[in-house]
Image (cartoon, rainbow, N blue to C red; front, top):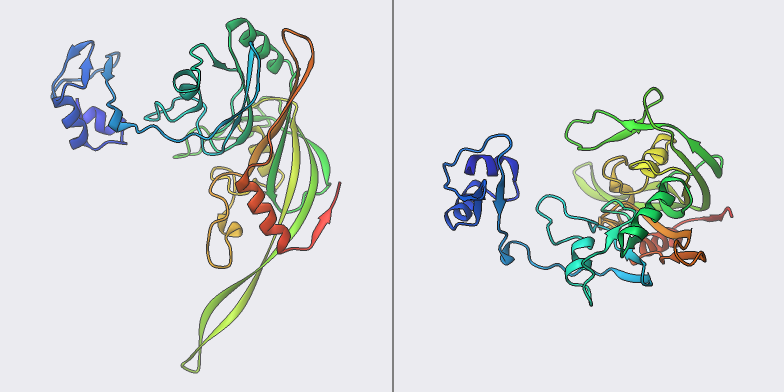
Length: 320
């Protein structure tokens, strides 16, 4: 039992799993187990998670829209939308169902955002609304608008990216997607460049000249663009894959991006710890009232700070 747990659920060590088994926190096929219990395919292993294992996080989501059928949330970056691995409580759906005031036990996700993507996310309060809104997302009846900070300057400034996306083999990276001209699914993204800027950053490095140490300045130049994105399809990682495919990956994208050294200050401080992607607006026709709804989320503080840093240290060109 302990060997299986330590290999499969690596967030605890073998000794920590042994302690939990001995304390009776795990069962095997609904029966008490020991550290030597053999686990085979099809077995049910249940773990009663103590409160101290998962301290309640401070989740700073905000409600953007609410009626008796729908809920619109502004999800911060680096927050899971649902449980994954050991993150049983550190996710949006669990918090809404359990700790929101008042709790919403029947709420369900209509759409999803990657963990590191911030912005508008929609939830349904009943199954009928969930089915109808899910159908509308699937048929393209919902318009989502994103803002992203990308490396480089797109040329042309506005265009449509129509490149099929499929799973690709990337050992050690989990679910990884890329352009697949043969078996990929149709994927279409419209983009519009909002502004571009060039950061001139001076780095100080020590060099030795005739045994005398001197400090010289080495200037690095990095170009960035703020782009508005409207996906016409909803493939997994679509915006991230499409932007990387045209040579302009999203800043700080750990999976499809490039080295994050470009978003460090002169003194080495990292300006952004998650991908620079934000769902700024979601537009749809209300499934019950028929009225046009637009839910917007302001640019979060971390992305605002990064933009301001770039704008203050650059030559700024407005393109739209």
